[in-house]
Every structure is written in C-alpha cells, then in structure tokens.
Amino acid sequence: MRFKTLACAALAATTFAAPTSEPKKAKFSWNKTKSLIAFGDSYTFVQGLLGHPNYTYIGDNFSLSFTPQQLFSNRIVQNQTSTASGGPVWTEFITNCGVKPGHTDPRKCEKQLWDFAYAGSNTDEVLTPLHWNHTVSLEKQIEQFEKYGDVALQKILKRKEALVALWIGINDINDLAKLRDKNASFASLYEQVVTSQERLWERVYKLGYRNLLLLNLPPLDRGPSPSVNKTLVSTYNGILASHATAFQKNHTDATVLQFDVNTVLNQVFDDAADHGFTNTTNFCPGYNQPDILTNPEKYGCGKGLDTYLWYNSGHLTSRVHEVFSKVLARWLGEQGR
Ligand SMILES: *[C@@H]1O[C@H](CO)[C@@H](O)[C@H](O)[C@H]1NC(C)=O
Ligand SMILES: *[C@@H]1O[C@H](CO)[C@@H](O)[C@H](O)[C@H]1NC(C)=O
Ligand SMILES: *[C@@H]1O[C@H](CO)[C@@H](O)[C@H](O)[C@H]1NC(C)=O
Ligand SMILES: *[C@@H]1O[C@H](CO)[C@@H](O)[C@H](O)[C@H]1NC(C)=O
Ligand SMILES: *[C@@H]1O[C@H](CO)[C@@H](O)[C@H](O)[C@H]1NC(C)=O
Ligand SMILES: *[C@@H]1O[C@H](CO)[C@@H](O)[C@H](O)[C@H]1NC(C)=O
Ligand SMILES: *[C@@H]1O[C@H](CO)[C@@H](O)[C@H](O)[C@H]1NC(C)=O
Ligand SMILES: *[C@@H]1O[C@H](CO)[C@@H](O)[C@H](O)[C@H]1NC(C)=O
Ligand SMILES: *[C@@H]1O[C@H](CO)[C@@H](O)[C@H](O)[C@H]1NC(C)=O
Image 1 (cartoon, helix red, strand yellow):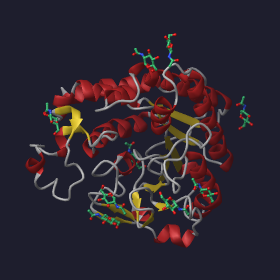
Image 2 (tube, rainbow, N blue to C red; image 1 turned 180 degrees about the horizontal axis):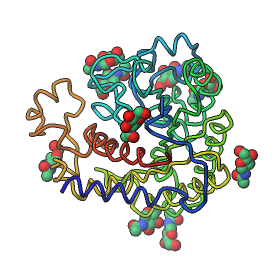
Image 3 (tube, protein in one colour; image 1 turned 90 degrees about the vertical axis):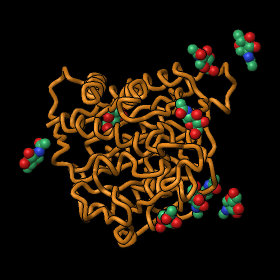
Image 4 (cartoon, helix red, strand yellow; image 1 turned 45 degrees about the horizontal axis):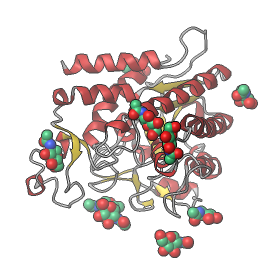
C-alpha cells in the first residue's frame, strides 16, 4: 500500500519532469554523481561548525568569504537543533551525508554534500526584505559560491559530476502574501521572482555545472497556519515549471531536473496514516524542547514528533523529509543515464 502510493507519486513527478521529446545528450547519472551542491532556505539548510548557529553551514551576510582550508575543515553537524526540522533534511537523506548524529566531513561521503542554503532566505532583496541583517539571499549564496565555494570545490571535484540543487520560493511566496494587498497581481510578482531565479541558474551554468535539480513549492496551503492558498501555490509552481522548461530548451547540453515535490507531498499528506503520520494539521507545541524526544507526553505529543507532518508552523518534520527523499532518490536514479 505504502509502496504503491509512493510509486504513483514518483510517477507524477516523472511526468512533470522536463523534455522527453527532443533528443538530448543527457549525461546525468545519479549513480555517478559525486556531489550534491545545494542552495535554498531553511528547508535545505544544514548546520556547520563554521556556520551561523541555526542558519547555515558556513558564514553569513557579515562574513561571506571563506578559504578552501576553512571549507574543508568545516563539518556537518547533526543534532536536535541542527536543522529546521528536528533531524536530518532531504539533502542529507538523498546523499546519506550527515544523517548520523555528530559531525560529518562531507569529503568522506560517497556522495559529498556541500550545502550553502541559508535559513530564512528569499530569492533576492528586490521584492522582499531580508529576514535578518545576517541573512544570505539565494542571489548572495550564488555570489558566495562563485567567489569562494566553486573555487574551493574545484580542488577536489569535477563540475560535470556534481548535481546542483535549488529549493527556494517558500519565503518569497509567504512574505509576498503578508506584504502585499490581497488583490495584488501575485502572478506577475511570482514571474519576477522566478525570472530572478532563472538568472541564477544561468550563473551556475556559466560556471560549468550541467546538472540542475529544481524543487517546486511544497503544499504550504496545508500548513498549520497557511499564508497562501492552493491556487497561489500552483500559480507559482506553474511559472517555475515554464521557466525551467524554457531554460532546458535553451541549454541542450544541460540536464534540468524538475522534481514535483508538491505532488509527492500532497500524496503523502493524503495518505498520511499509511506512512505513520497521525497528526496532519498541527505541530507539537514542545517541538524545540530539549526533552521532546525522550518525553513527548509531557507536551501532549503522545507518540512523538515522527507522527507529525509539521515540525512547527512553517516546517515539515525530519520524518517527512525522509519519506519524500526516498521518492526523490529513486526518481533521480531513473533520470538521464
Ligand atoms: C551504480 O554503479 C555501480 C558501478 O558502476 C553498479 O555496480 C551499480 O549497479 C549501479 N547502481 C545502479 C542503481 O545503477
Ligand atoms: C538555536 O535554536 C534552538 C532551538 O530553537 C535554540 O534553543 C537555540 O537557542 C538557538 N541557538 C542560537 C545560538 O540562537
Ligand atoms: C548542536 O550543535 C551545535 C553546533 O555544534 C551546537 O551549538 C548546539 O548546542 C547543539 N545542540 C544540541 C541540542 O546539542
Ligand atoms: C549585508 O552585508 C553587506 C556588506 O557585506 C551590507 O552592505 C548589507 O547592508 C548587509 N545587509 C543587511 C541587511 O544588513
Ligand atoms: C544586526 O541586527 C541586530 C538586531 O537584530 C543588531 O543587534 C546588530 O547590531 C546588527 N548588526 C549590524 C552589524 O548591523
Ligand atoms: C487565494 O488567495 C488569493 C490572494 O489572496 C485570492 O485572490 C484568491 O481568491 C484565493 N483563492 C481561493 C480559491 O481561495
Ligand atoms: C479587492 O478587490 C475587491 C473586488 O474588486 C474589492 O471589493 C476590494 O475592496 C479590494 N480590496 C482592497 C483592499 O483593495
Ligand atoms: C540561452 O542561453 C544562452 C547561453 O547560456 C544565454 O546567453 C542566453 O541569454 C539564453 N537565452 C534566453 C532567451 O534565455
Ligand atoms: C495534533 O497535535 C496538536 C498539538 O499537539 C494537538 O492539539 C491535536 O489534538 C493533535 N491532533 C490529533 C488529531 O492528534
């Protein structure tokens, strides 16, 4: 039952994923991929010893630069507070890098994880203000990567063997809903946001990376206190998909993978009980308490955080990341080759 459901969801993702008609020399192979280089927001960020606590793997807006030595001395931290989900997130699950509690050297992983996502990040600072003065927008993450990250990684990895993943837009769409009048033309705002993203894909391509993974918006409309409805989410996702497809058409030597995490997660939400989730609407009020894992009853969260879809008002639990990561990893294995 569980398997069948997710197989269907994976199929939906495949259907959504880009061009099948044109003959292209797709070189992508997940099996041969040596590294995942990730950008984004709190759904994607992992904690590093040299990161801003609770926000990033390395650096922040006040200290964007790092040397190769610093990058390689850094470690992924896995503990109760090292992600925004109470445990490992999708980049860690699909690479199996940093999942174990403690510290992980990405260079020791079979698939190395280099995760430059910043919690609370928007696409850029044009339409929405930074959440904090230390925030690194996606645009700044790419700039940081051009100046420091790519330079360092060139010493140990080949660009063509990397998969570059971008998952962004969650804060953009939520912030725009709060900042703009309900009657605003959200579609044209989303168009601007995604156009900015496309310029960043171009910059990644110009560096020589040829494998891009884009994730669309999760079902934010099904959150505990949503700022956006299903229509807005699907409008945004439609715009993202059309830009991604156009980008693929104009870059035939690249592989642009569009993972429809929205469909996969909606399926998981619909069949929550099959996956062991019993609380689909709320989050555990004691989610960030030091003893939540050992004593969930104390906070009225009987069977623990793993039975919740939502970790807090804005984030999915680590267990949800694990569930969709299985679908994503299998799907990646079916792409290209
Ligand atoms: C991945 O590659 C290895 C060696 O090249 C091979 O043995 C293995 O079967 C491949 N795995 C998949 C899932 O294709
Ligand atoms: C990081 O988040 C945890 C959990 O919410 C909190 O207890 C801790 O104080 C935060 N750390 C910093 C340095 O802000
Ligand atoms: C998790 O690791 C970070 C970074 O080392 C540390 O600041 C934080 O206190 C740790 N949290 C817990 C709950 O151990
Ligand atoms: C981010 O840092 C730059 C300098 O590196 C600074 O000009 C800018 O004002 C900072 N952003 C915020 C919001 O403080
Ligand atoms: C950043 O903002 C905090 C308040 O949120 C403030 O205390 C701090 O001085 C600011 N830092 C800089 C360098 O502007
Ligand atoms: C969704 O939200 C937008 C913006 O507030 C609103 O215009 C639209 O009517 C809503 N759609 C539905 C189906 O509620
Ligand atoms: C939004 O549009 C509706 C229908 O045109 C109108 O009745 C309402 O006053 C508008 N709201 C605002 C805040 O402009
Ligand atoms: C197509 O891709 C090329 C090479 O990256 C780029 O210079 C050009 O601006 C792109 N054209 C469009 C219409 O996006
Ligand atoms: C979901 O969790 C919240 C917070 O712990 C609780 O109030 C609510 O009763 C739970 N709902 C179900 C169906 O278990």
